[in-house]
Image 1 (cartoon, rainbow, N blue to C red):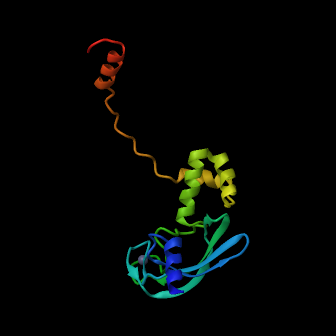
Image 2 (image 1 turned 30 degrees about the horizontal axis):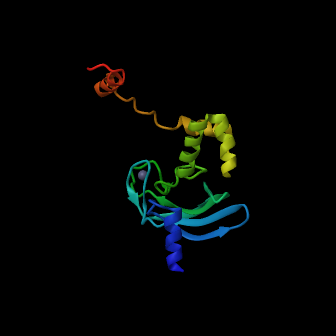
Image 3 (image 1 turned 120 degrees about the vertical axis):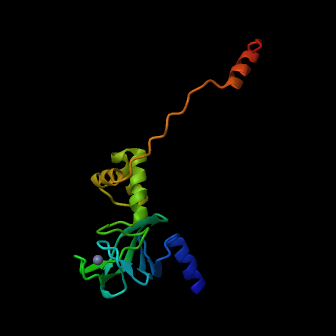
Length: 179
Ligand SMILES: [Zn+2]
């Protein structure tokens, strides 16, 4: 059974070492994944000082990438830590799981990037429609916001445009000329 749980964790949270899966509940329309962070502590987002003093915890329910046609929702227990830096303006802060959550995010990072990619590929209006096909209910304005939040693509340096000599030679040869 532990083997199955480990495999499931690899399947659900690849490259997210700080996330632990506690249980999975599947019904006709929705998959609920009970998960939490296994990090020892977290870094204060204001001053950067690490803390492991837990102040409390609560549940978050970020939507995740659908699986097998079902919506996936995480039931994520997140901890609030006390910042131990007496000079810091923030007294407590909530942990984030890198690669999975962000502050106030209602979606996992991978669902955000999936929706942004769909919006970018299909134009925003069609992207919102296609997301519904995938099993994700999302507003057009949200897809637009996610696309807007993408980093600007790097501008590639212009390439020198030249005529490929071998192509010239092949064309000339096919026309019975020598080059
Ligand atoms: Zn701090």
